[in-house]
Length: 102
Image (cartoon, rainbow, N blue to C red):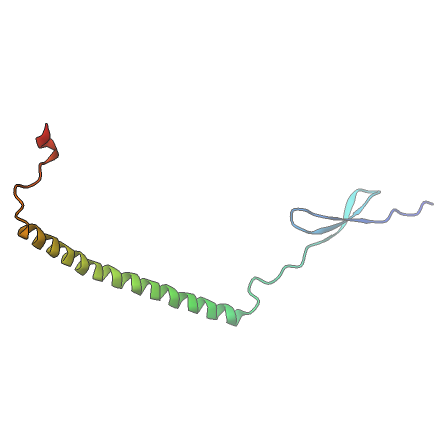
């Protein structure tokens, strides 16, 4: 009687699993999935990181909101200054409009 052929191992390029195949029957004898690291190694550290991100988002929002509110005051002051300059400028007639040039 012939000695049974030894199994050979093949590593799947897609998922990384190891397959043991019998060459005589061409069947998969054993399938081993690769060991996966846990998604979250330390749950306490992950919770602290999420809390820190929430605080950072809140700070960015507050800063954006404050700049939005102060932006209106800045635009108002710029408008008043330009209006004052326009009233003080007595250089003559107003500038020509583009459709007056035709």
